[in-house]
Length: 589
Image 1 (tube, rainbow, N blue to C red):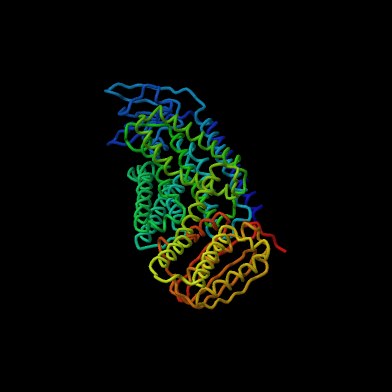
Image 2 (image 1 turned 90 degrees about the horizontal axis):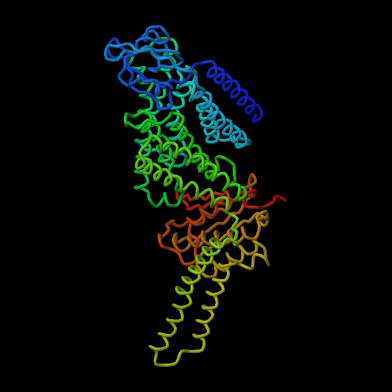
């Protein structure tokens, strides 16, 4: 199915690309004139800086009298889309005098279209490669449809600005659908409250209205109000919806700050809003800063990077970021260089202070995405990197220091105070018992730092030994079933598995007050599942640390390994950890 779908998409892409290219090659140059009807006259309201009209002497406020020798009111493009395009000559009146303007043909349309074609073609190649064996769940199919719409929107940008109906149809449909896709990807895992339901209903309703109006515009001449709405109003509505989504995410972030910290820090709503800021501020709104359309519209592609990354982390897109760091750095450098180039070009039309403020927020919104991509690619730690080595060493030093201070040193201090307070000498048996406990704590520390027993006994036997030691230390009954396939994981993953299971069991005993625990390790569909079920009441203290991973750290590590962590506290407490064999490095036997 992937081959047929890819071929169909490629064929449609080629056909539409050729149609638009031939259309732009045969039509006249880009004028860049927007007009509105005032009474019985058409008045020029905007002149684009990169259009042929900008250097022709035409001014805002001039009245349009004729277009290619015909009355302005008879021009179909002007009536439908409120723009003047595809014309050789126009006649305007200014202060009672007629002026005739003749335009020379330029290649701006073709050049701009070729730029968007290249971007769309690259996007198409990436999508075809990324979608292989991907279209098996709802989210991946939604991302595929979103990407297809984005690709054809890139092709339609220039034809739409020329008044081509197909181009306008694609752009209006994309504008209507974009907030819906952002809403879907934002709510991939969060609960949907009444406000979000109402917002979704508004998005769907507005989308239906937009599509209905653009469809009617093909058959009939709409009233000027609706023509105005299809020309600029849809963009105002889009901005309002994106701002509402951002405000909703901001409120959710304030109300559940701890939950947000434990997951990804990428704010898709902020990225989406900022990607449309140039279009709003520097093209649509009457701010006095007018930049070329082809510059401001390029930023709209930016949310696709954040959406793809979020879906990859959520395992809706099966891509594991297995690439050389140099390749990632090259890709990031290329994207950043292109973005900086576009921003520098915007500097010709926008005040420096305004541009600096926008760039600040844009960089701020993309830092988490860049950081997470680099961290994910570097999941196989390279300790020749001095920064990685320093961080790893300092973390381990802190863990060891905390453990020794809270156990060994405290026990020695207790023994010393006991000896000072007692008049008689401490018995030899008491001293030996305390020393045995100190030795046990130090051995536990060594085991937590790196359990050498795994290499000698294997993971299955080491887990069994850990459970036996836990049963001896606490009043708890632990039953376990272990699939032997778990032995196929490499040593570094075995260490993580053992420490994670120990953390789960300790949580059940110390915080859940459980006395019955069941551990099940099973293999299903090329994934290994580790399930801990207890009869306690699960809670986790915020500052419970010592040498423990903490569930948040386990979850972060699992994300890098392509796994998942789920905690179910309805009825019995169930903690389930999933590790894929192919992501963790295991091999099927």
